[in-house]
View: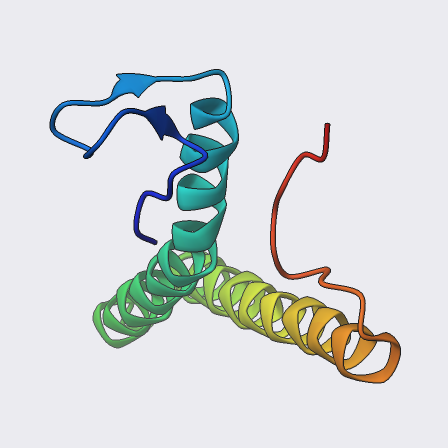
Length: 105
């Protein structure tokens, strides 16, 4: 997300001075990047568990461990998708900006 005028005081970002409102900008930028990072980690877990499934051979413990990792990764993806869908639906039906972060003075 781009930095806005609430994050700094001055004629431009290069010459501006950080304000206390910059904390909300930093938190907003971190929260904006969090869902894609969680999705990438879950995708990596799915790939890793698939590799472990293929390489487990006839070892039942390795197979059970890989299936457990796969199950938890898929549950994580489903929970992330469901929570985001719920937030978007709340925003659509009520008009409240619940997917945007901001601190009002």
